[in-house]
Structures are given as C-alpha cells and as structure tokens.
Image (cartoon, rainbow, N blue to C red; front, side):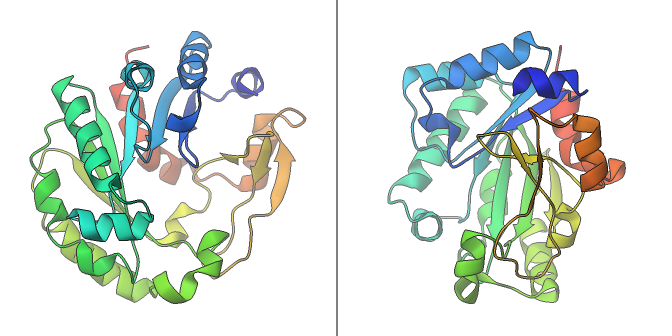
Length: 245
C-alpha cells in the first residue's frame, strides 16, 4: 500500500486509528515510509507507551495527540478510558523534553464542551506544540450512533471553538475545523487499502468507498475526492514545514 501511494505521487502519510501505538510494527511502518521518502505523522491516543513505541515516535516527523478536556475528568469521560489524560500529558511532556514537534487535536462536542475551558491555557506552555486544532464533532460512523450526546449545530460549534481558541497564547497556530472544512482535504484509507469518500456535513451512517489504493492510481482517487489544494495545504502545512527530508 505504501509503495502504491508513493508511485501515485503521495508525499505524506498520517498513521491514525484506532491508535497506531497498539501496533507491534509501528516502528517498521515509520522506517519503511521514511525509506520511501514519505513525510510521516502519527496520531495517537497515547494508550501504549513502551520504549519501542516512544523510540518510533521520535523518528516520525510529527506526532498528533488527542486532548478533549482541560482536566482528567472531562478528557477521560470523552475518551472512555480512565487514566488516558495522564498518559497523553506524559507523552506531550516526553516530546517536549526531546524538542520534537507535535500537534493536538480537540473534538468540540456537546459532551466535551463544558470541560474544555482552560485547555488553551494549559497548552500555551508547550514550546514545541505546532498546531492546536479544534474540530467539530463528526456525525458519521460511531458519531452517527452517538449524535444525540455529542452533536452541536454549526453555529454552536463556531461560538464554542472561538472561546477556547482565545484562551491559547502559545507559539503554535490555532485552527478551527467545522465539518464543512473537512471535505476534499485528505485521503482516508482503511487497513485493506479502501479509500473512503467525503460526505456532506450532515449526519451520515458511514463513509462511501470510492476505490482502493492497490487497484486505483492516487491521482484518479484524488479526482474522485475532489481534493481542494488550498484546504489540503492548510491542514498539512505543519507537517510539510517541519520535515528535513
């Protein structure tokens, strides 16, 4: 799959999940991607922090963390994992101590919103935080099933996100991502190579499948996805500006 993507002109790969830290071969995937000339970002929920995982993350160009609350109670409730807040903060401090760039993604939903006040202030102290993204809760897949608990209207999200963004005063950028801005931004690829199509901002049960990276050329898939270069560049500018290869 990685070879096929590179052959199709792809220059960046983001390993997301689930949680890539749970994969025994994460280091191999990162090393092989770098060998192919890909820029590598790993998005992790910090579930597993054994030494091999930490070493692998240090070899990535960028690490993405999920933080959905200013304190443990709110974050852990949103993630459904007791103790996850402390693990995320431990990993953030580890990356900071190694002078490694990282980004933070925060889902703004009806459930998470009450616990987000103060998160911007807490993040302001990290000098290697390159970007903080405030993301509207997506009403699709698991989100579709849980929409009554989490869904915010577009206007509600804009108001809430602006309040939290104003609390941040660190060196990184702050980006606010409503659902409409997620369309035409990236390839979402499953573990079997299936590429998932974009959906409208409204509630949808599941992503449509538009092709497979092992059977379809990446350029053809990009045309089907109607990738918007300006929005793609805004999303991945942090990864592109921090790489040295």
